[in-house]
Image (tube, rainbow, N blue to C red; front, top):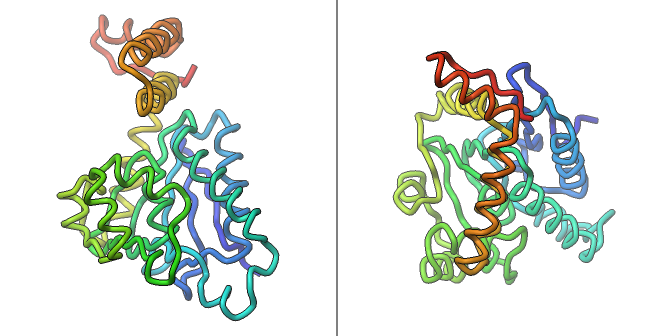
Length: 261
């Protein structure tokens, strides 16, 4: 039986995680979510992984929960409480991991699938990408942190409307709103997306970890506390080997070789 979530550790420091249920637009059945979380935990612990990319097999990114499967057989193998805990852990891992996380959105990202894309740091989308909250269509309120991430990207009013009305957002509108960082031709998404991720993986990933920590802290902190936290991350980054080589490379007019430490 094929894995519902594939993992590829690439030589360039990128870990590619692929949702692998293409017949259901990669809807999250009972097996996909624990496999995804296990892969993310592996990425977090592996120093050779310097950037994490998520994408979907076939023509969709992720259709969210397996509604048809749940309706037919119930939450077999996973209780509602366990699902909620897994959703929290997965989105938090994508958001707080001290490595860049990138969603390569190749098609529809609906419900929890949209939330997972939003939980990533960055989103590169094909022209065929489409986002829809979807939850209200079946009488749900939402999970995987979408309500948190979306309003920080596009504002409270637009995010709330997206949840209440669940109208699709195409790639062009997603770029306009700031949901997508970049939109590229569909047949170029994986090539350009993985090149983008490799560029991040080659960067000063020790500093990237501190950048993410400072951004995450500043999401809810008062200005004085955010400034103090930022100063601490700057001091820590200045003591890294990456900074030592980066400063030396700058003076010597060469490209630095960042090691992530």
